[in-house]
Length: 281
Image 1 (cartoon, rainbow, N blue to C red):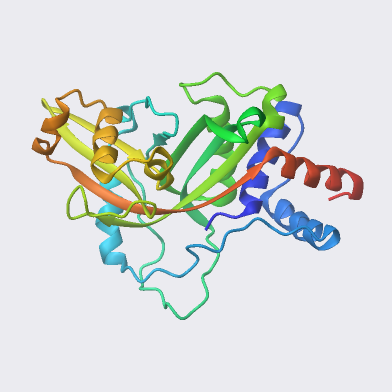
Image 2 (cartoon, rainbow, N blue to C red):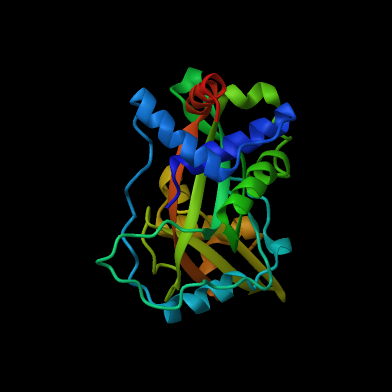
């Protein structure tokens, strides 16, 4: 699952880039955060939801992972919804390094690599901290966490084509969210998934052209959509221009997945950073 340290590291990478300095490593951030928590009595923001090891067999996850990576990133269309995310895909994505069924009685092992998304939001003080999307890009290809988080923290902040690059003056109103993707499964149909639990990756052919798009698990809930509204919106995001009532005529390839998400506001990062600068790494 994603952790507070992952969000902290993304902030560190972005801030260091904007300030033209060398960022701390993920290991340094993790060690420093633990010391910070102990010395200040601050409670970590890590969420325990979804930490239970999956019982899903590799044989079931493998086809789903292959299917989500078959669609070229050029078929992912920038979305019109404020909660959407952009996808980066690798054509030769390895499914996973774990080939055995996990023991549900054993404690979960922190991942060293994972498919992931990094999301930047702008928090509005005038509207009770309402979050507006500022950038979100990720990949279904498993990434070593330090490399993946470092890369996508900057890519989503500076290269999301729907937005201008984030500037230093925006840092104080930013929120960072990290989602680690897990449990890829082929869905039986367009309704074989649960709101608030699963993200969706769809692909389909329309007039001889292949389309694809994804929504992270929190998007339908944030938008208040039903399952049908989610699927139709996702088809629109992919570029489908057919009549809304005809969406069931399109043969969809649907992969569901879960996302272990954590988020942090800049104010929390700044307090930790000031502690680091005062105490040393």
